[in-house]
Image (tube, rainbow, N blue to C red; front, side):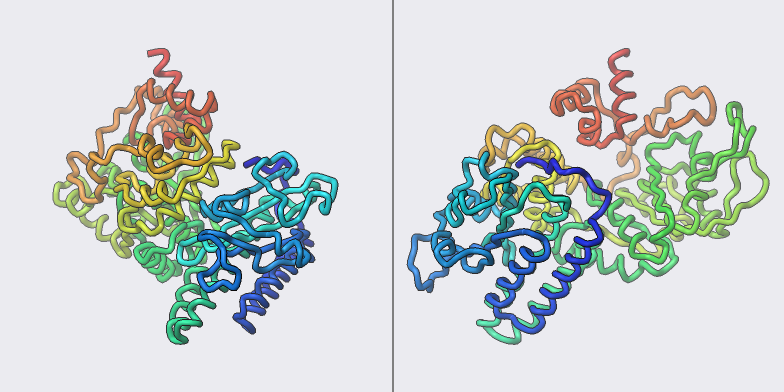
Length: 544
């Protein structure tokens, strides 16, 4: 897959945006009037061509068992089209895995051909090359899925020399493919029983409009939807929210979703990793400091709470906060005021607190390492995020998402076979979504060929012997003690960037750098570090 070489635009041009809105209104309106797939899908292809210039659209579906044209199992053919002649539609028949269309149908993954003349897999079967414009022509093919199973392909031609961004076209086509899958599913349900159709249609509508789509939270499992539902129900409240669950379950994503779905969405969202701040810097980081508060404080500094005023502050890994700071945090939450380090006057702040931890805070309270009154203050609205083992039906969707993102970022074209996807669903994933994303990125970079089988996948999967990362962990073993480096002043600039909750050896850093071909940004991302953290640790390790 080749990335879009067209000039980057800050947003969709207004004329195209208006056309997108018109297209969506027309399609949704048509679905409301008729569930006949032929009417809806042909009009969808018509509008894609007339409004956005995505031409010669076709929808290819697997032959059904009662098809009027008997063919070998797995054969697919063009069933709905716009801009194709009857002869061209008739030529659009594909054996399993044949060409770009057959590959998308077999893998369930989107394929983008930037130049059909340079792609050997492109067959030019339905429309011959001499019937197309002489300039560079792209071909986009996306899977149409029903209940997680790929049943067809939505495909079209696109002239490369356009002002509209290719990514905008891809995003809209994904929505159209989803709608096409729903139309086909509704047709199947309608043939079974009306009551089942009404129930299923309600679920599909909910899934399409769920916060998972709006906030980038991927998945439709019942455990995930329950957590999203709880989040939306408390979004407008002012009470503190405590996100619980294992590491790697997406706590920061949920915290941002809570902020975006609240009335504070236009105000700041401030994230603070409590595990990355030395004990001596906690107060000045959270509450700021006045000029002259300590040696080197040449000017006053606004703390995280003031920066988050009228917005949301997310305290990640709050179980790692020292007891002394827990007392001051409790006072801030109760009175709504802060006092800067070295200051005397109280400053009023209006902040909603979202906290997160993978630890068992009740055990920490019993052990005396976490204040009981602060725990009760934080635990007003606890929301437990499900582990990946509890939402296995989402692994397929998540894997495809990470695969497409890694392919685009690294200019690769790697895909997983159906058996490999099934194997991913069987893995326990103690590191949850973060671990899955890392495995997929490593696979994209190191795979020997474009198609990864279940057998080849095994060498990329981590060992299953490691114990799952459970949320209930004794306080004595949950987190290793932080080792703070010598500080020249109580407030060394940006020292928090150098102190994450865990460390990496020099060998691990060098391996990550080699894996990403010397790109420190990607190597740091793979290890869960900022570029600053990665560079500091690499330099420190090399000079040790």
